[in-house]
Image (cartoon, rainbow, N blue to C red; front, side, top):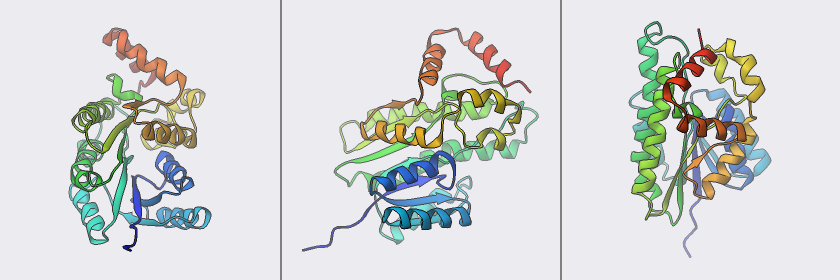
Length: 262
């Protein structure tokens, strides 16, 4: 009898926030993990903790996914080690807050690279591997910012709009195959995102609506396994997305500009 191969879930941006919570939630379900992030120390600590608590296989790769070569490096890592992947969670991403013309161009382009190009590349490069499974899943992490233009978060919201549109189109293309494609669009989450984006002034507002990363992760995985197209955690966020669809764009943009003003 041939030995059954171990199947893995790949999670990018796994060292903190939603990515870390999804890694733990998958481990609780006894799913083996391929975890990717920049921080060697944080990845190693998470690897050790998950192995000890949940007795699953955990392999880690420290890499900067904002670099153009990174997705091919990830593929080479997978192929070299002959990992079989049944779940791809594209969680890595970040935002920059400020007026477009005043923010550093290089930093904004690196954000575009990570939030859009890396997501697209990993889906394309790993799709042949995922398609070999009887059932596989892609979960692209988006944002409620994808549903509107957001002044002072102009590029971030635009990249997330790309992810939303791309995910829905890919889902349709793959609807008759074994790969289910979903998009997760959280609102404010207690992950330190606002601080890293330079949005410290927004923290007090966000605290009123923040969800916990473990809440978001659990909702995300339940939606992914249920093969939902769009997963929006939290009733307030669902109402917000619905409002964005029916209210005039100019009105929504004016409101967003007031919330995120510099």
